[in-house]
Length: 182
Image 1 (cartoon, helix red, strand yellow):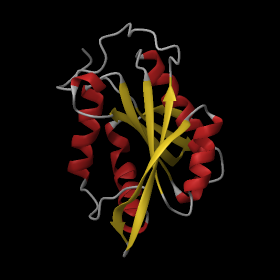
Image 2 (cartoon, rainbow, N blue to C red; image 1 turned 30 degrees about the vertical axis):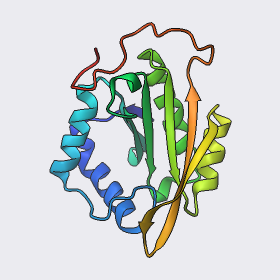
Image 3 (tube, one colour; image 1 turned 180 degrees about the horizontal axis):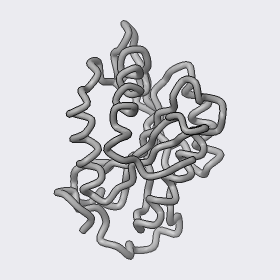
């Protein structure tokens, strides 16, 4: 089941993200953020009218995803970066796909133009890249050896989904990068 995340979900979200900080390369943070910090991040995303969604399997936490502004400059207000984290026990069960599909639809409804995926080089990066490609994302580049974690350099692969590939002018004002939707 995919639904909008709620404040009550933040302890599970914080724990999953903390595990990824400590043992994974999906994030380049080195110290797990506190529940208070994750609550602030959640509130900042939601204050902009952007989606933060939660996945469950049989009533148990399976993962989460959210969209955040791609860059802070006003010209970027039509694009978001998608982030997806799947609980280890739920991997290989379609949770990542379900979260990404739901995220795409929620961003599309907002009238935004692009979703950017930044996929770090790890044991699961090829699976993540393949999933993004199956859902219409295209490879647009890579940052080589841009992150130093676990005593090694890590690449970041950039992928982009054009929600309106015709290049038509925007029909919405985009994201208000200072707080809420403009």
